[in-house]
Image (cartoon, rainbow, N blue to C red; front, side, top):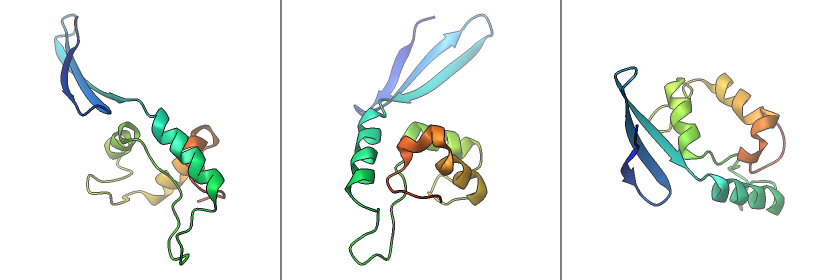
Length: 107
């Protein structure tokens, strides 16, 4: 069962392989999220997340692979709309996912 790279932009990769045992094609997306998480840490320690006039606050940067999982769960839509605010709040307040956060406090 060999994997074949279908697409890659250098950051986000899509691979496919055929599972003969179960007679199905498996397509997987993956990325190295470490640069995003490192930038999140830098932003979180740089300030409180507000823009210059304090009208907006950045609270998180979510890697694309997690975003697609949230789309499959119905938490967010393809165009960026939050469809389940309570579920997204739960994700962003989860201490195990704190590396997504770019500012302090609860959502």
